Image (cartoon, rainbow, N blue to C red; front, top):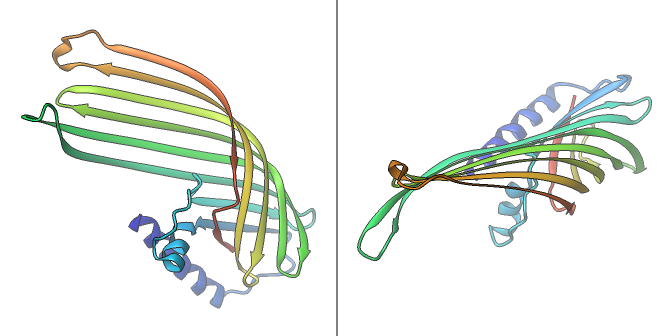
Length: 220
């Protein structure tokens, strides 16, 4: 997660520099908020890695707020890509090389209404549509397992945000999503010694996300 911490530090540095050199026009009819998930960075500073919080899927967020109606378009995106290689003990005498490649993408888009509940405090309520895709390939000496799945769904969200300054703030929110999953799996064997094994399943589930993540955002 060093990349995420570095990205947050760069985002924070640019935000502070921008906020010090620019003044937000109070008569603007629309404002834009760009945010980054700062949860892991805050955890490492406060608790020194002794507390693990499940991160939500959205690393970067976007919001376009109409100040005349306090209604906003909102969006978020998260992505993780990686690869690894290691040797596993096959039968206590030989080792097999295992390669793993994965890709994960999550997006959301929706609308919300903001309500000021106190000085610098706002309550956000709205609805999101969500979608995502995951691909995972494991290659063990030519025997491959390919898993890929996608999901779609949506549901209501409820959040609270606090303005640190006129431009910068913190946001946390929870959501209750209904998700439809479609999962495919294919297992292939070296030299086609055995016919490929394929499987597929579908599912519908409910997912409730608690407000345990913190988004740091800057307003333009």
